[in-house]
Length: 412
Image (tube, rainbow, N blue to C red; front, side, top):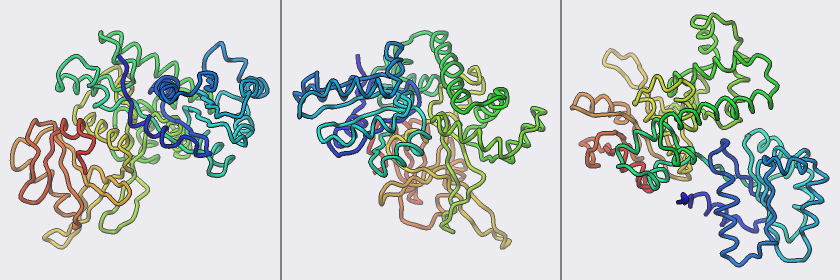
């Protein structure tokens, strides 16, 4: 049974024939190829597009290795364009095509070509496609399965499904595996033999151990405020290693470029300004994070926060970490944190996350920062408690995580 990924399919459909290169980005094995070669291709066929007008190349496949040569790839595609009707060029892992900018540019000039490419690295998109084509690259970013997509093919109940989702993550192939050993081996091998090797080779990293230690530290501290200086101190005090701040920043950029992690920076809500450091880092897939730690340190609080962050990004929100300044009774000032400030067009939502709200004291604690945000935008506390979604006396919406994850319009 296939998984419908309508949110991304519709993004491709509305971009058809717009004169731009549709660039599908995302972490490896998140479903980019399936989206392009199965779902989108089927859409084209359903629209009565002839199969010989759909040109496909997966540059990651061994049988297509010779097509990584730009002249051979150009000739292969050019030979298939034999009339004036529209042709759809679908290219997978295009960063493996040498001088791909020149090849794509050659076909971009043709009026009867509509191009779609996938890539697993942010740098190739931002530095190459956008620069080379001067605004003619149109990005669609794909994430691993949302919980809503995951549960659509899950055989158990929602509670069991969320536990598995927080444990093994949402890479599509995980949904076809039944045993823990099989899932754990798959995630470990994928992390070490695909993601890590790819980052090391692409960026010519000599000291692999330093990068791996940084990954271990980030994995152990998801959702915690940190910066290169703090990480350097951790290396020195805990690992006994001397690693400079510039080196750590470079490694962090490599991990961000690979889509393995994402960064949420702090925003002073009352001061209306960004605070560059410290920031929070979240894993694009929590299963990969757990595999990196050999499925130890499975703190549900942090994993739930990471899952909620990923869902917000899937829904197209820009997500920051909020800081609220408050005046204390002794006239001193202190700062409270809002887990997420979510912005999309003219919509803003403030979100706190918590595993449980067992009593009024806990509710007061979770509400405190939100109550001190003096604007009219929606303020929500998301909890794993199976409570009925309701408002508090302070106008704060209490929402259980299932209502949030399973209803794509739950924040509207």
